[in-house]
Every structure is written in structure tokens, then in C-alpha cells.
Amino acid sequence: MTNAPDPTPPAPAEGRRERRLRRRYAVLTAALCLPLLWAFLAVRNLYPFAASTMMMEGWGLGRPRTYFVLRGETVGGETIDLPPAGLTDALSGRHWSLVAATVDNKSFGIRRPHPSNLSLLEEVGGPGSLPEAARLPELLRAWGGMHNARLPADSPRRLRAVRLDAYRWEGQRFGDYDTHVRAWRQEL
Image (cartoon, rainbow, N blue to C red; front, top):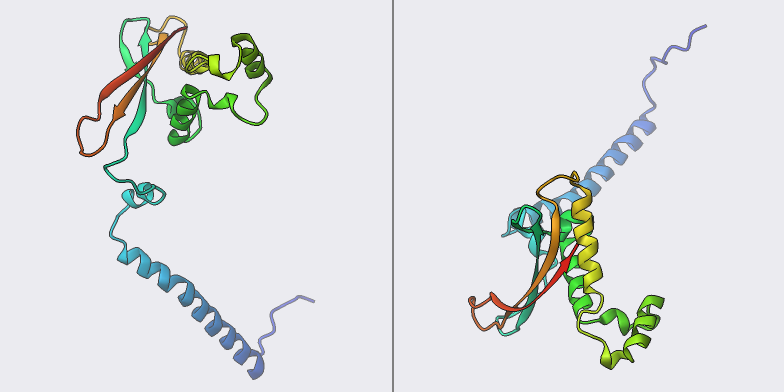
């Protein structure tokens, strides 16, 4: 005894039900896919620009901005750019938010600061006596250490120091965006 397929055709009621299901799924597929297809065809930005502008906040020329550039000084005497996103797995925008918060000492103003931050506050005599960018040397050392850990010990591309430069753009026009404000340097 073998289990051969039954050559009898399906009952007419079963065939109607199957056609009705196929039509229903075709309508559902069209209802989901046609708006997406229309949106894709009507988009004025093409990849990758649409992806990069999708989550950006709107801003005008009137708002001034401070931005940072991370550089390293190699053992060979060269100055190189260090993109933090190349050192860690975090998104680039989160790095610069971290830098700005570190420069502004925002980690000391949270509800439950880290115990080492509390002890530093006690040492200096409170938040008013805290130096600018109190924890920035540690951040720069950590990023420099990450860069150096990826290189052989005798590489001339190893860093001897990490430098963070702050620039200010006053807005109002697309120019004068490279006004150097301050620099921090950390030996490794």
C-alpha cells in the first residue's frame, strides 16, 4: 500500500473558497504595496540622501553651534583625524553629544551621579568649583587607548596624544564656521 495522491479534483465549494482566499490576499497585498510603491516613486530625495535627512531636526541659519573635532598625534609626528565612530560601535551623533555633555560637566548634575563624580565634587568643594571638562581627559585617554589597542606596539601610527578642538559657528550665513574656540590635549 502506497500513499499516492488522490487524482480526484477538489470539490467545487473548496475551489471557490481557495479562489476567494487568493483574491482576498491579492487585494491585501495591493493595499499594502501600492501606497509604498507610490511613496517610493514620489520621493524627491534618493538614497542615501533620504536616509540621512529623515531624522534631522530643522534649523535655521540664526542658531549658533559649537562642534568638535577629534585628532591624534602619532608617535611618528603626524596629526590624524580620529572619527570616534571608527573606535566604537556607537552612532556618530551620540559621540558628539557625549563630548558636549562631558565638556559641560553634565554628568555631575544628574540625580544620582557616579560615586567617583561625587568624590571629585567633594575634593574641589562643590559644583561651583568644578573645572571645565573635568572628565574629558579620561574620555580622551579611553579613545586614544582604543586606537592604540588595534595597532602593533611598534607602529608609527600609534598615538602619543589625543587632541579635541572646539569650533564655533555663529550662524547667520554659510561661512565663518571654523572659528577655533578651545583645545584640550591629553598625553597617552
